[in-house]
Image (tube, rainbow, N blue to C red; front, top):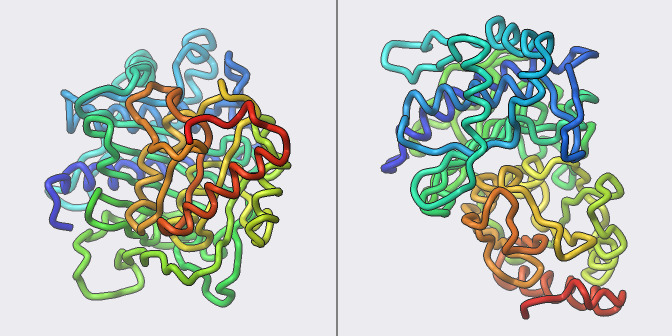
Length: 383
């Protein structure tokens, strides 16, 4: 991939492979050290803490002047020495810091438990102008606890624009659909080959997918990322652009999130005449990955209240994968997503994503019409 962000992509690919290896080591554990967050927005596990520390240390070593934004903070680790030791031990026993070959990007571990906590807390920034890395160490922690679909999200924003995206989905098959082209992804879908998917994109250069693991449970060496190399089964495959004639196929999260208006989501599907719920996934990053891979091609999200907003780490970068296949993403008001708004995307309300400009206009109209029909004028703003 001939891009000025080639090194950023190479470093991110290398470290996310090790993060995926770590997550797979933790996945079988019955006790993943889960604790509830202080904001009551779900659990956090030793996998979340360890991966955020790994991502931060490695990318900070490569790009020391960049800022970092991540979902987790280390307060639970600082107050619980036993939990802190479990996270530290997990990093030491699962991460391979030796480069696969001379000259490859280096993975960096924290130097001590205190350094590990400091690295996690280095991600408490708000996004702003300049270069900012955004991490979701495990998106779909609730499903991760059940050994179901989850993802690791790494994004580089430059002046608030999605520039580099790297997403690991260790349980998602890299094939579009080997036998059934209408196959949908659900939370309990697990790649039968154990290889998982690694998706990546650089703005203006397309989106790609390749297997994450060489074989079950083993992380592959960093792959060549030039798009015109010989096509082998492990060669990155450029994700195909959307075709206007394709029927709409939704991905959503049905009756799993208290923040959602499920009746509106169902009403929009009925108005558009599409199957519902279609692909049903808890995590937003796997949803964006499924859209980019063509396993679905549209999604909407309407919160119960106008003062409820998305978190930047659930969307930044992962949305770029879909955009690089031609997908259109706005909020329910038809506005572009403002990634400079803060850790909470307070300048936007919900999401509407569709494969083409024409399809997006139709879906957006359906969303707003259903809100009017269901008497939710309080949720209509903008257009």
